[in-house]
Image 1 (tube, chains in turn orange, red):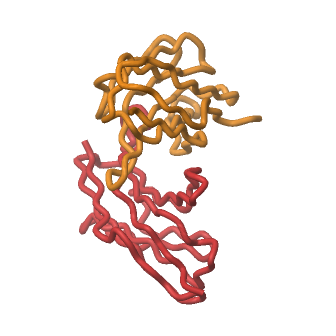
Image 2 (cartoon, helix red, strand yellow):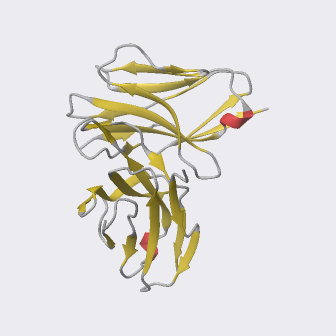
Length: 116
Length: 115
């Protein structure tokens, strides 16, 4: 298993450009999440999904869109990049067991995004 | 919502010594999980130890142990026999049992290990 993969590892954008951060997992996990990590702020939840076709907002959703058309993929779209979106982005997945949520969170390696 | 506070932005420890990292949290949930994650320079988030809130016994994983004080909402991490490879950012996090399995993180503590 590859686990949770993220592409690209690094990206530089100009203000106003759009792009998609890719996240995929091959563990058949129902739950997937996007976090951003800023210096001195810890990780904060952007969007999450509890299954294919279902998404919801987290703590800091503005400026981002997500969709979940398959169990495996959960892309994060930046609509019009702003310098405030300069951050490290982590994708994570997790699963339930017999209908009960588990605590296991599997993180991807992160994408470092710089917006100039 | 849950909030997690780490009041020590930086800590240092001599190799082979013991260090304790502090964490407090606030939650209205009756059932939740608490975690310590390690983030080395590679950026990878690595689970160090977890604690189920309903368990009174403190969790232990080799050189890592926690002091869980539920009434005080405190969850500190003790690293014994510190090694150079322990140098990293450490994040305390909480996860409510209800909801969508999403973590609430503290702001992190950077641990330096001095040879």
